[in-house]
Image (tube, rainbow, N blue to C red; front, side, top):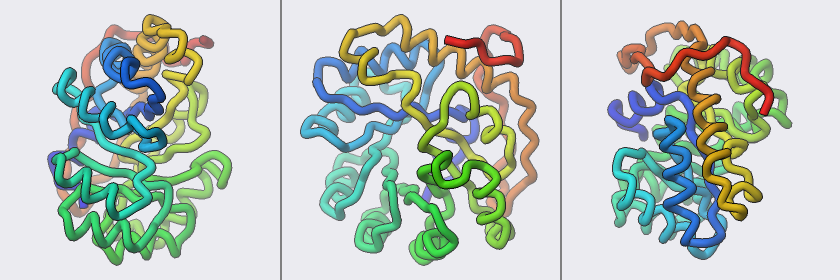
Length: 243
């Protein structure tokens, strides 16, 4: 249910930062800190009472970002997102009611998958961009490649989340199955609570610079989406620094 334009945005930017916001006053400063580091994709997890309000505030103040909602687990959430014309939604699983509502409302949606049965459930609702979750605990990239093999001819692409960090995300990005990766390591709850925006920016910048150095070679898929150049950043070494 991702349109070609949205797929290109994910393909180009590679890294989606996952945000959890407890205080509405932190939403825009935290997103701005990520943006200063080069992040252009954000999933704001719908886990607090102010999550939806925070998403709208970020969208209004930082229109250069592509922001969607995560932890979308109820049909009413889907309807609210669609009514507000939020760019996309992401869920941890494959709830058929949620997927049916997303399809009905025309909301771009990436359901969470962990098994072949999950993939086939997602396909019932025309979802071809899938969240692989929880990526590391369930078996990491090796497991995903084995699971995805029978569906390769369908042109499915995956966004792994769960356990990814600055030390392992490069392995995922280099794989042809991967559209983009997601994670929250750049803005831990403590960094947000302490308003440590400079550290968040630096973490984001290091990850973006490293992602730009990965020599990604992806085979053309049936959608015809061409490989796009990444955003240019100051050159860095191929090794992710410890921080």
